[in-house]
Length: 390
Ligand SMILES: [Zn+2]
Image (cartoon, rainbow, N blue to C red):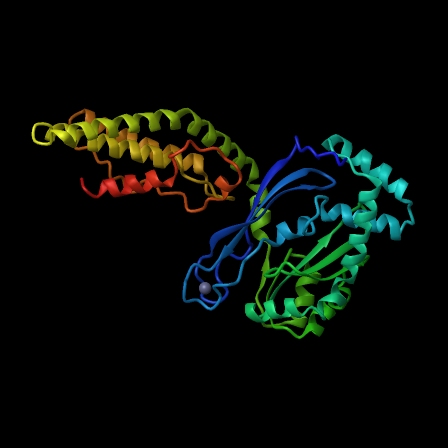
């Protein structure tokens, strides 16, 4: 029987499309679906990938049906594979170029994966080699894929992503040319010299497809920029600076995330219980409306504060620079200041300008982050609604 794989060392990564605005109407895209939530084993780490799909939010936009994916997520592993693309490429290269036997590759990979607590079987290596061979055929197959071409017509063209991957230390790079909008691989090839001319050769099958190219995403390699500029002089070329910046900011982002989670754990349950109690007292007081008018007013104000605290606890982070923990602290401080004023008999101002907003994006939630039941954004909305009647 097949042994279930275990992933004790998995690192969670949430990936969103590199394109943030609709190509048709330029509106900000919104998350609409989790394309996948799966484990990927690469040569270096085990990743739990949450791949978030986005769409244009405008109901009348002609680009409404386009699902935007993350090119980086698609580059990690082929669809349906647990082993990452880097391992597929590694197997292919060792087998074809260095004429290694399956046993030799098996031994090397087993040693490589041991620190990650992962194993790979001979059979899996054979399977990965088949995938590698299929990958190199991708460019010729796409010309006959009518279903894909229909999708491209709907998308009004393709957005190219050019990825150079070095599976092994050496001078060989595997280039993957993909359409970001459909995730489809258009060409894949081994390259020993990444000159402009060589890259143009790699892109030639894409030119031959005769489909409109809407844009290109690549890293900032100069020869890539030159090759694209010569083939498609007028189309926008976006450099994946976002990923570079996000990687640079990861330390702070992770530290902030830990603080945020810690604060949330400590305060959430208490706040929730407190609100529950307040609601009960409010209901009771409202049964004797006339004599308890003052108390009702007081309870309503307290409820509003509590709702805002709960809203603050649910503030989200967004890599690279939106720090949920800092925003949470900021919001809580404002609430505290306001409460202090109230206690001194001054006019408390619960309607703080930067009042907590409801989380805009539930990617964090999709990735299994725990939230106490009933403490979701509903309460933040409640808080906002509450503010209007003061
Ligand atoms: Zn749109």
